[in-house]
Amino acid sequence: MKLFGTSKVVDNKLQIGGIDSSELINKFGSPLYVMDEELIRDNCRRYIKAFAKNGNRVAYAGKAFINLYMCKLIKEEGLCLDVVSGGELFTAYKSGFPLENVYLHGNNKTPEEISMAIELGVGRFVTDNFYEIEKINEIAEELGKTQKILLRVTPGIEAHTHDYIKTGQVDSKFGFTLLEDEVFRAVEKCNQLDNLELVGFHCHIGSQIFDIEPFEDEVEIMINLMKEIENRFNITLKELDLGGGFGIYYTEEDEPREAEEFCERILQKAAEVCEDSKFSMPILTIEPGRSIVANAGTTLYTVGSIKEVPGIRKYVGVDGGMSDNIRTALYQAKYECAVANRMESDNKEKVTIAGKCCESGDILITDAIIPPVKSGDILATFTTGAYGYSMSNNYNRIPKPAVVMVKDKEAKIIVKKESFEDLIRNDL
Ligand code: LLP
Image (cartoon, rainbow, N blue to C red; front, side, top):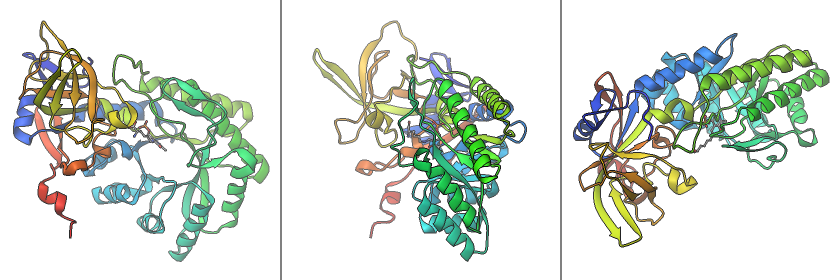
């Protein structure tokens, strides 16, 4: 088990941001998402320092964890923001985020989302398909505006953890393929339309990637493509957004690299390819999500039922589950956990942490090795800061837990716990 940021063991109990986890549960209820502000800010600063030179940008991928507080934090740290829906955009807008620093993604933006984004002055649309090119132009024309766009390209690389395929992966719902001149036709189309300004390309090759090589290949393919565009159309695209996906530690099986290493190698490769192809260095953007927030999140649960199936398995039931963390059920994701009020003990046992949803697949961790646990104990699952709260749901009408941000012995609620009343608010 690995502790990150300000998490530490004091008197055999888990502290985060200088606050004891039992105190957090007593004050804010259970279950609880706890976010370590210092670690999030530190991660932001590391990316900015390593990458945001010469006009290059770091855009936090909001899908990992977004709310008003997080948008304000991202603004304060000088990052741009990647949003993928009207809802994420609205959150950014309401937080006072500078909308010219927002990238709007999505493979099927609705006309309403497109209008809203153009009206609000979103910096860049990451444009996914021909339908959208036309729609953005049409709506921009109606609104009397010109919209900056990037075209999303699938560069033929698909990477997840240690596997990656260099050809293939043209079968994606996202973006324009390099096949049959599709990208060239898209560039041509943009050129014909008066209310679009094509400023560059975007691509994203996957998530939770540990190797740097796929990113280097991505850089090479994309800069060569930009050079080709220059040759064919006499247009020099100035921006290249390389997406996110930098891998992080969930369990001992993961051996992530430092953010700085990804950044330096990407910048170095881009400089080399530009020099070789005599292309002027574009403004580069990266879009890390998980690597900024995942390790900063801990979910605290209270243990309830404990069931032993003799000779087979011991189930430890907690008061949350796939409604607050669907990643295990959805991706067989692995997590580490601990008994927060008894971190170390001479003897340990193997248990399976089960959620409370009416679904046999609602298991949070299979075969965790932890000190003997009893009802009323606090169970902490680590590295739940990304795609936990943001993918939470109300299955079985379970209210979503509160989110607290901790820092310097202070905890503030940044998202209130849902009430039963909240659950029926839209029922008629
Ligand atoms: N940019 C684009 C265009 C993306 O599609 C994504 C993630 C990111 C950036 C951020 O990737 P990150 O740095 O967070 O890996 N729900 C899944 C992850 C889905 C990722 C989707 N796109 C999970 O829980 O693992």
